[in-house]
Length: 242
Image 1 (cartoon, rainbow, N blue to C red):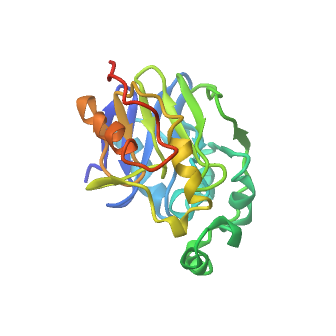
Image 2 (cartoon, one colour):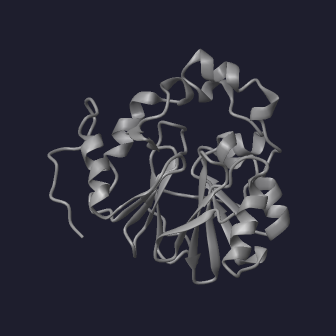
């Protein structure tokens, strides 16, 4: 079964489960993979790479939007099978390398209880490097890091500048309707809204870790959603460009 979909030139969405997505960005030296997924996700990812006529070693680097299990649990296994470098924002690096979200990583008791479950832990995965706000990742053909803390301290959105595509991680979910994730699962729920104000207005495509992508005029739905948020949301709604 085909599990991949091109959402913009050079950007492929891969469904690692029916609810979870990762993204391949074709660059100067091969692929940059954005997020991995659960422990079984590497097989789905490599199957998609094969369907694209490429080989595992064509995944040169992995950028993790944040260190939650449904994004990083398969990271160590994927690195073993591809040799890819694992990159993450420095604020989430200790979580990745500890193999779990710490108690202070969730704002609600329900989130802290969930994180005690062994199935939500992962093999500790030392990062090969970190990414910083504003950085354009080498070899990625214009993939820029936007630090968007709140869901986790080191959460990032990745903007593919040539196609104006935002890969959102868990900054926003799109499961039928656009929404923020449960506050109990976020490190600092209030900070999420302030972070979203940093997103550019001229997006042409939006990829979500959870949910279906938006393209063209449909991206206006994100702009409208941002203006439904309480204090901290962006200023007056600008005209869409591009």
